[in-house]
Amino acid sequence: MKESSALSFGFAGQRARVPPDPIPNSEVKPCSVSSCSVVFGHANLGKLAAHFSTKQTCRHIYPNFITERLLLWGTDEKMNVLTVLAILTSQFGVGGDIISQILSIVYILFFVVFIFYGQRIQMYAMIREVEGSLYKLKFMREEGRKTAVETIKEIGKPETDPTPRVDRYLEYFTISPQSMDPAGIVDKLDHILDVRDARLKDEVKLMAPATDEAQTYNLENTLEAAMALNYIYKVVRHYYIQGKKTLSFYTIMQLQMILPLVMKEAEAYASALKAFAYGQPIGDGAGPLVAAKLMHGYETRKVPKDCVMATVPFEGRTALVIKAEGPGGNVGKPGDAVKATIEENQGKIASVIMIDAGLKLEGEKVGEVAEGIGAAIGGPGVDQYKIEEAISQFHIPINAVIVKEDIGDAVSPMRKEISDSVDKVIERVKGVVLERTKEGDKIIIVGVGNTIGVGQ
Amino acid sequence: MIVLVVLALALVSLALAFNAFMEGEEIVAIYLVIIGFIALGLSTYVLMQSRSRAAAMKIETPKTLTTIECKKCGFKNVREFQRGDYVYKDLDKCQKCDDRQIITAIYKEVKEKEKTFPF
Image (cartoon, rainbow over all chains, first blue to last red; front, side, top):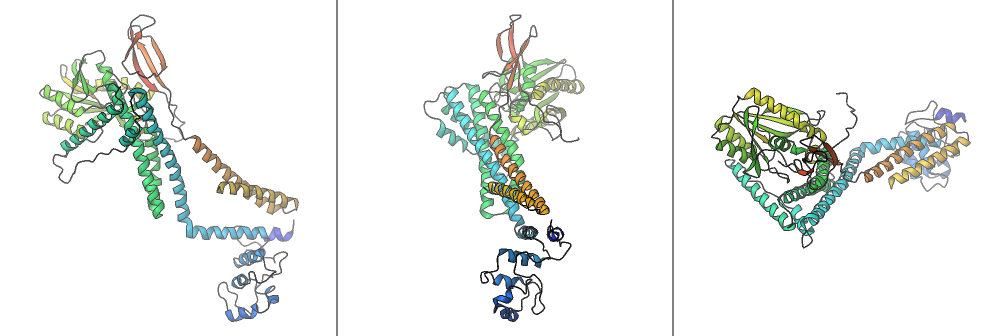
C-alpha cells in the first residue's frame, strides 16, 4: 500500500489528513504561485495573457487557477482530463489519487445537480410512479370492457357484435340538476336518475335480448363497473398528461398523493367485474342478506320501486321487512318503499330500523357490527331525503345497524366475515326492538344495499 | 435502459476493484467494491420491481364458495360457486332426508395479512 494513497484519501468532499499531493504522472504541479491572482474565480487577465504566451510555463505553474487551465484545454498536448480533474478537486481542497478525486467530483456534482434540479428529479420519479399506475389502470379498463363484452355475448346471445354499443355505453354521462336555486332539487335529481336508469336498462336489453330480468340487472352492474374503471383511467390520464405538459410539480404531486386511494377503488371495481358477471353477492349486500334471512319463508309482495316487503312476526311485534328485489343486481328505491309503507299504515309505526354496509376505518375489523341513529343509506341522497321526510312527518324514531367493511369489500364478492355477521346483526336488531318498542307494535326493518346474488 | 447501464457499470466497478486489489491498492479496491455492490443491488432491485409489477398485472378472482343446507336435517355442504347460484335458492333434494336443500351463504375467504401495526 502506498503511503500517499493511504493518507491523502479524502471522502465525500472532506479534506484528507495531508494536503493534496501532486498528481502521479502529471506534468502539472498543483500549487499556487504568488505572481498571479489565484483566488478562485477572480482572474487577473493581464497576468493570464502573459502566461499563455509560453506553453512551457503552463505545465508547472498556476495549477490552482481553474480558468487558466480550462482555457488551455486542447492547446497543450500534455494536458489531459486527469489534469483538469486534479485542478478541479484541488480547488475544493481535495486531493489524493485519481479515485478520490473522481469521488469528490461526483460528490460535488451530486450536490450541484440536486440543488438546481432536485425538484425536477423528484417530479420525474413521481411521473414514473403515476405512469406505472396508469398502465395498471389501462389494463383494468381493458379487462372491464372485455368482461362486459364476453358476458353479453355469453348470456345475451346478441345477433350482432355488441362491442361498439359497449364502447358507447362506457362513455355515457349524467348531468346533475342545477343547484343555484336548490328548492325542489331532490325531485329533479330523482327524475334525472330515473331517466338514466331506464335508459341504461334499455341499452342493456338491446345489447343482450336473451336475458331475463335478473340477468339484465347483473349485466347493467357489470357495465357500470366497467364504466367506473374507464372513467378512473381517463381522469388519471388527464392529470398525468396535464402535469407532464405543463411540468407542474404540484399537479403531479397531488395526483401521486391520492393515487393509492384511487388504485384501491379501481382494484375494487376490477374485482367486482366477475362478481357482477356471475351474479355473486357483494359486500354491499349485507343489508339485503339480513332482510332476506328475516323474510325467508314468508310471503312477499312488491313495493315501489323494485323492492319487496314481507310481514314477519318478530319478538312479539310485527316487522315489515323491506329489501330490493333479488337476486339480480339491484338496489331498488328504499326511500319510496319506506314512504309508501308508512303512509299505508297511517304513520302508525313504532320504529324504523335500517341495516346497511358502512365504511370502516383502517384498523377496524371487517364484519364488525355497530349501532346508531339516522337513515343508513348511501347513494346520491334522494332516498335518504325521502325516508327522513316520511319519518319526521309522523315523528317515527329511526335506528341504524351497520356492518363495517371497506370500499374494496363493498363491491367485491362478499367476504365470509360479512356473511357471518348476519346473525350478529339480527341480535342487535332484536336488542333495539326489545328496548325501544312495545309488544304488538309495528316496525319497519329495511335491508339497504345491492341485492345481487341474494334472493328472498 | 438506465438500469442496465447501471448494472454494467456495477460489474465494471467490481472488475476494477479486483484489479486494484491485485495491484495492492486495497482502499481503492474497497471503495470500488462498495460502489459496485450498491449499484448492483439497486439495479437488481429495480429490475425485480419492474418484473413483479408486470406479474401483478392481473385481476385476482378469489375462490367463491356456496354453502348448501338442508333445513330439516341440518346437513351442510360447501362447494365452489356455480353460475346461477344465489342465497335462498331452492336446490335438489337432500341426500339424507329427501327434503329440499337451499343455498344459505355465498362468500369468499380472504386470508388477512399479518398485522404490522401495534394497535
